[in-house]
Length: 312
Length: 255
Image (cartoon, rainbow over all chains, first blue to last red; front, side):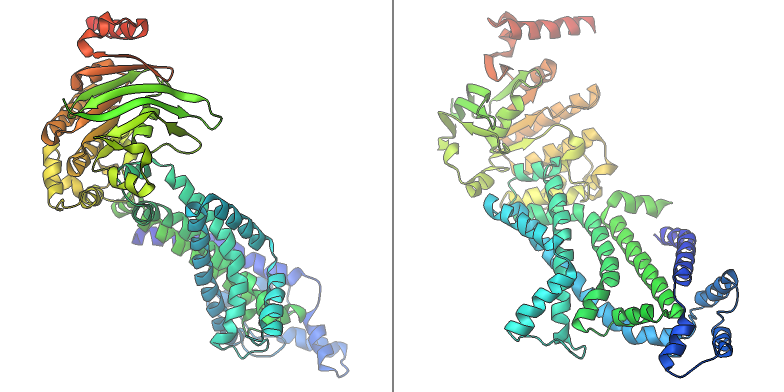
């Protein structure tokens, strides 16, 4: 396992390198000029010399490839520069907003896993009519855009029932609506994965033997099906966590949740390159970490893979 | 002779109502060992599925009578079927390679059978493995770590733990070499001697059937065309059954 992890980390280097290229150049090549925007935002008159001086201050006067190399050199050491808009260190900015986003993503993942298991298991065990109804419900949930779901929830729970408030302070109570918004859609699409996996496994010979042995459906599900599908499901869940981290931007903004979404939308509007680049790198690392975790779960849940890795 | 299983005019219908199994009737006495033989697609496995209540929709079974020791099997609820399966009627399938759960140790799967058969202590697992000529160490292995013949013997050990009154073995030696097949059939006979279970042995291989059964049913296109002692098969009235017997003898003569 140690060896597997080592190689997995080594082979991640080219991937991370490619990711840094994309993060840097896509942001740098998008139209718009952070310096002009910042100077205009200050309100006072400015001369071309002011522009040049500010460019030099942020290193934007150098050619693009040179800027990339300098940026990469700093990024490897965990140094992402200073925000053009606020003048604060990028790491400081991100560490203010990151915990709220991680909290939301984690609670949405817990919600999505719970919803997916409920829908997936119900779809195979419920009577035929109920199961068909659930499948329709699942499709509806998957196809509702998250911003619309957010508005719908706000209309019902904030405006009609008054059970929640819209402008919160990041307390646990304010977490409920954004979590529900994110986990309904993710949980519904994962529920289909759970359903497919269980159905496929139910056709396997070892499940037929368990039935012939006289085991109850619940015992077959827990003892025979669960150990077989936990690996593939972990992969799907991990991918969802990555998507939840990234997709939370809009939902965070709608609900006023003080996460990275607010920071990044502002940074995009202001062409605050260092923030956007650092954000993209962090998202990439997040995806990498979750998929690595999923691979470890796949290996642990498959005795043959586990043994194979123990020997090499 | 006590009648164990009574099958009277059993039909299995497809979703469109076509009979895939057509009015099959036979009786199986307590402890009797019979072979069910026929070409692929003749309805052998469907018969087994109907007897275990394991037919998948849209297939459905109906019969004039389907009784096991006098109990009407057609009136069983899903819960009652579960209680019956395993400890009363147990079925082992072809392809031993995939019959065990690959993610769990052999021992855990046998313990599960021991627990299913109420009152069967867990330590019997080692004993059951010894009786099918396997090292009790096999319990600690995963299915991929043992051979096909060993897996089939594990399934027979499972039958030993469950102690069913009827064991249905659906081509249990498919994919095994001749020597391993011989060993598995010997083990099967040992298991039957030990538990007194009746056997319905499904196969397309008359040689294997001859080794474990005393009587045979011949199936063709969803019907039973012959029900006779194995020794009388070559003088059967039915041409197909006779051809089957003669073909095997010719083959054996050549080997």
